[in-house]
Image (cartoon, rainbow, N blue to C red; front, side, top):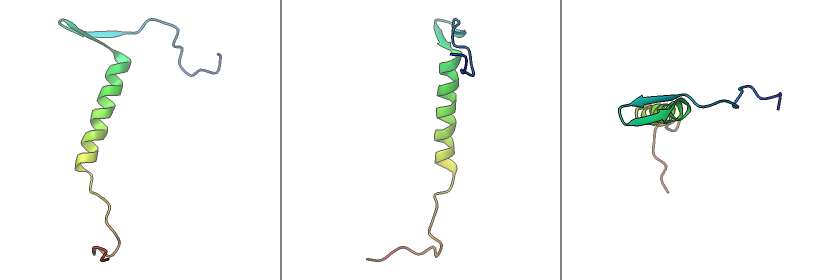
Length: 56
């Protein structure tokens, strides 16, 4: 186990907002998922080179 980049053998750090508490690791995952979702909404969808629709 000496090849691990991060030592996971310690208690998690928590952030509390009144009655709610969330671990820092979970907060990072949730924020990154929200950022990817927002990017997916606003980034342009790729189009074909000619810009014309394909006809069948």
